Image (cartoon, rainbow, N blue to C red):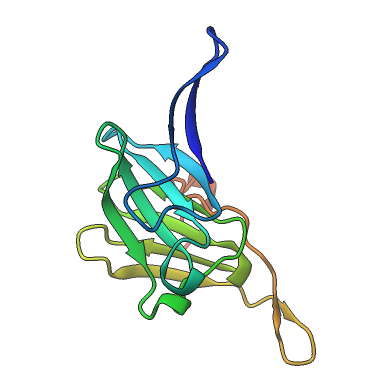
Length: 149
């Protein structure tokens, strides 16, 4: 439950945190440095009721300058895995691995502006969902350009 910066040349840890103010992280991973100089963290179990949340940490202040969780809290929960990425324009792309779901969040409003949910399910009651491990936004390649003219 720690995020650290390691100086490879000196072979030592030079910065470490267990998260912003209470509650601290539980299962935090996928630290990603943004162009703003903050660290995005996917916190699997540190949100309300042990659900997931996304945190943007201001490293110098060791405080969160943005957090996002499901509303209600249980609507965003991934016991393990999960990724997040800052998109051009400021939105956040998050992969909720355990539920086979990817969402784009408007960082300013907290609204979900795009969502994908895997239809790959199994089990007698469709209780097993194919996990998504990482979703990335890429520019549309020319070979996928629309063929309708």
